[in-house]
Image (cartoon, rainbow, N blue to C red; front, side, top):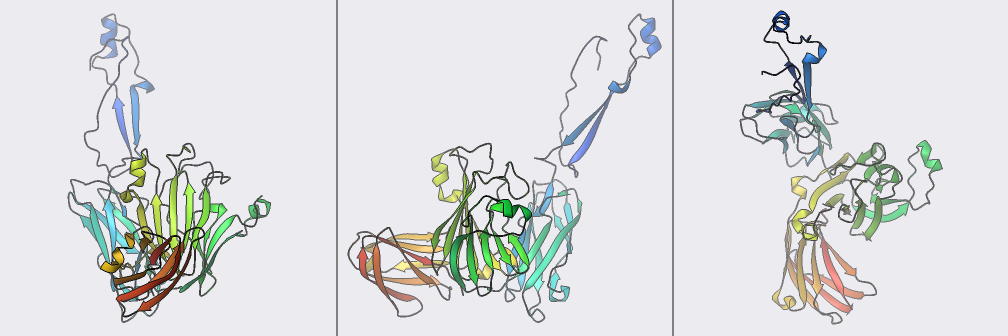
Length: 437
């Protein structure tokens, strides 16, 4: 580059390949004179010494695109002993033109290594591949009880480890069989600040799970991010929405000025709790709020529906916009539900009943199937069949306001059910909950 002594100029360069394996790298620019200092003096030009400003370090810490990142897609996986095989998914943040490898090893857990087998210790992504699975075999003959298996990612090539570098496999069984109420109460965490907190005795929410003393709690101290409270400690649900607030650690809303929690529905069949908050406290307008609904069933299955704020109302109402996480609440902790628990449920109305009831279909956000009467006030008989492997589906009749309903249920077979509405006024919704036992 040629330039005059008095010139000011910019050096422009571009990165043509960003597949570095480290999130930080340095580019060193050095100014080297093409003429000696003596030559410059001889030509009656002003001589300048090249001191420390002749060196420039360019540091790149790219948090958004730090090269290729490898990590677990989720933090937990659920499995039952009978399933035998669990596949734990890994992903790359972007496709790589070279082969990417990552080492996997056991990292403890309550299940003995003798009771399971890790299929391979090195996972290889071929050029262009984005997802791979780690196979873990549960040895049915030796495993006698539930527990946890922990995995950890290690050495990599052509990639860096992401935040989700550790994974827990929960060997699940149904820890619970009934819900014994959902209440507003004040949770005493034992922390020093609790006795100075200016809140009443109904500041938190709990769902009481039986048998035992375990509770699913929405607490002020975590800005109402729920956790399962067991004898072995607190197990929080995974944080799936990034938050930017004025608090510390889990309590991103320091005074809970914006975060809200309320019980939407409670019955022996299920409980629904809403958690509402703006993820970014600098944006609290009506477009930016997130609503999470937790539908908890007696066997510990929990549907977590997350609906984030959107720029347009059309996008917000789009059913595909809602993300649903199917969780298993167990005494070992919280995981996604095992495949064998994720059961399809379909209700088929008989033709004689279609004249009187709207088929609202299956609600993926709550795991139920709903019917709605076309005209209130007239008792009708509903005939329908059920296509499902659910052993014990529950029938939940919801009333609107002052509505009253009296009904009788006749089960002809496991697939043929008659529901006789004996008295109906003025409107009801029939919801069929996925309760798996």
